Image 1 (cartoon, helix red, strand yellow):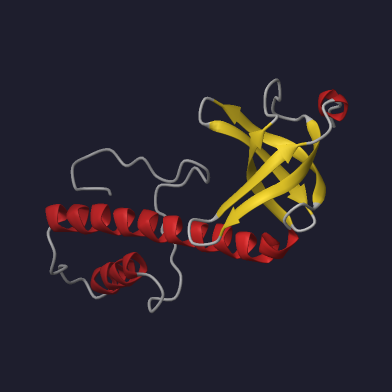
Image 2 (tube, one colour):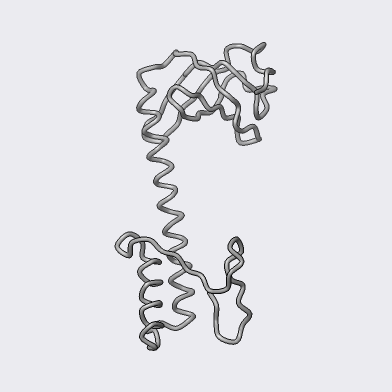
Length: 158
């Protein structure tokens, strides 16, 4: 947020000082606030909220947007788990998309989704191609668990 008397950073990607964007005001509260600010500026009127109040609202909106994104990710994971629930034991070709202390993850393409390799993950690294079997799904938690079934295939990279 630009405040009077402070340097204006502008938009980092467009290299312009005067910039805003928004969507339909009925979709996002931050866009409604932006449109009300623009309306007040065009009418040469002051806005009803102070800079501190705007900063507080912006922080609240950021938290709520992150919460919504978490829910959306869980819904997508749960939908994928539901789609695969009847295919326990099926085999898929995949690519390792993550390998860390938290786990090893593989993305399959039919259907395109990601799950955790809970058996045979040793030695796998990001980018490895791997054949996996579906072991378990938990729709409520959005979990999809795989086991690597072909160790020889794993070192072949795209």
